[in-house]
Image (cartoon, rainbow, N blue to C red; front, top):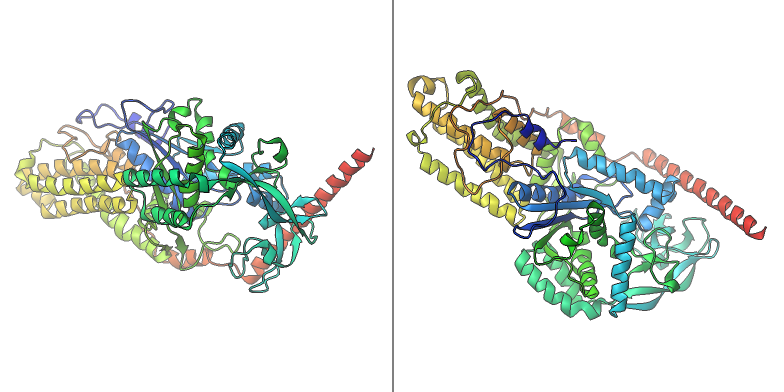
Length: 625
């Protein structure tokens, strides 16, 4: 399917514009180029066992999409990779609840994730998944190289073991009474009622989630990554990467806290079936821990995009890696994954810049799928509000230095008072005027009849600040500056009194206002593109001009004689009454609804347990025969 940019660009006849400003997305496989700046972008792989909520979306994939679009529209050679993280305990648990196999669960939610991101206009160059042969091959190769180089070690751990089905239990497969609040269905890693993090050995009357039996402590030998041995090299790399890549402040602080405490060997295997197999005969019944495995997913997903993946991942001299995530994912990207790369003694492309966010809260509380609190990716479409409005609100609320709060009142206000009254008003006012008074054709115009030098200087100042902000991945600031450029356009029209009287009394000045103003609209089409791609395409369509690159400074690129398109509204007003409607629709479930859902999940789990028992009995019968 053709992209928005291709659709808009290809629809136009030859237009009267300056050459060298048009922007087209690459239509062939994207590979690094030796004579260009090569940008590799990843966003934290969303976990596959649930529908992403707005906090997940702004924390990684949407933020990365903005930077990817900016990098591309500036003419930089850029590849944007993402996919679903599919292995691990949480997938097994969710599959048990839904009464399906882990693979069936992954297939279902991978498709849901892709649909959500497509609707939000998040355009990956490749959106893959971690349950692939390439993932197994590359993860096992890294594991074996670490082992060969002496950075893996064996240690014994005491875990809970179910004697009924003969298996070690991951923390989430243990349930029991919370020692803090007495909630009877607390998990071995956390109590959902009081929110406290737990150790499975703390639970009162623990039971196996699979068959309800009481587990017993049992030792199990695992493989640990020797982070303590790698810490000196890791610290030297971090100091250099932080300085050159200008990491986000919270990314550096979280990493420093780990280093200050002193790195210790970290377990990278688990007693599970659903995961990448450990490539050692003595550990053949174990899998790689998902947080060792998951970051390698960036590499394997690239390898599924192109057989020449090593040109991106093993050329640190010519590729800069930008990674986007929420703050809870930082240590795995700045400590565990880089240590794994260093320990292989291979020339890996390593992190250049890390962009991390704090948390987006919902109306003063937390998003919760189990309690149906908050807007999840598939709900946003149901409101009837276009994707660009959602993108705008989330990016203006991006929690860059502290937690921010999603508010329906603020959501409605920003649409009506910022998008509609500022950007929409500026574009519609001037395009409509040219449609009505100039029969859609740009007249001959002389900008010197205006205070053009002063105007250009003010726009250039804002544009430089915008480019600096985006280059340094200050995304919220960049959007604020884009809107400031639009506000400067509204002021320009007010200062020069663009109206029928101006056209009648000072036609030369009116012509200049139209010519200069339309060129500012054209600049805005590029400046808002990383944030509001549909809006950018709509502006280009109204100008009857191709999508363009973001320049270093303002210029008059639409020339006299160019025929623009028809004026259309970019945004529509949201009725304030929707605020309470949506707050009620996406508020917390009633106690009865929550209880009904809990019973439904328990019923599914019981059904799966019966299926497992039947399968085990059949297998035993076959073995005896």
